[in-house]
Structure formats: structure tokens, C-alpha cells
Image 1 (cartoon, rainbow, N blue to C red):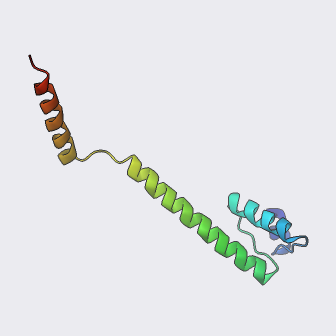
Image 2: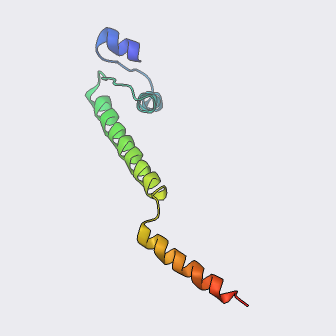
Image 3: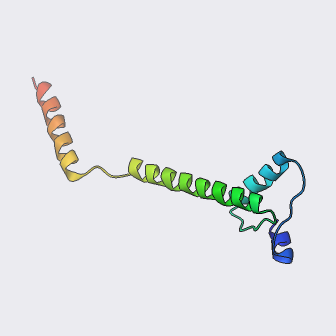
Length: 91
């Protein structure tokens, strides 16, 4: 696809709807910058690529939140809880 786009400037697809969708899916998955000959396909490609990128950003933000270190206030509160638990087991 990239070769065709470089050689001809745009990619003209023929085939079933399913085939065209597969081509769009591959172009998005491989992060290819393709220009489709059909304005309708080009619009679909742009919309789906944008949605994919937004999903990636959201997933990255969620991953960063999960990896976020505990703040010092939370650590102090947790230490206090640990002390209380330790005190309960003193004989």
C-alpha cells in the first residue's frame, strides 16, 4: 500500500466492502499515511484512524494512572494503619 501511494500518489481500491475495510484496518494498524482515491474511503480512514489514536491515548493515560506512585500523604496514612495493626498484636 505504501509503495502504491508513493508511486501513484493515492491508492485506488476495488473489491468488496469487507476487503476495503480490511485495507483500512491494516493501514491504521501499521500507522501508514495513505491517501485513498475515493473521498468516501479517505473519510472513513481519517475517522477510524482518529478514533484509534484517541483510544491509544486513553489507554496510555490509564496505564500511567495505574503506575502512578503513592503520594506521601497516602504513605503516611498507610504507615499509621500499619502501626495500628502492629499495636494490636503486641502481647
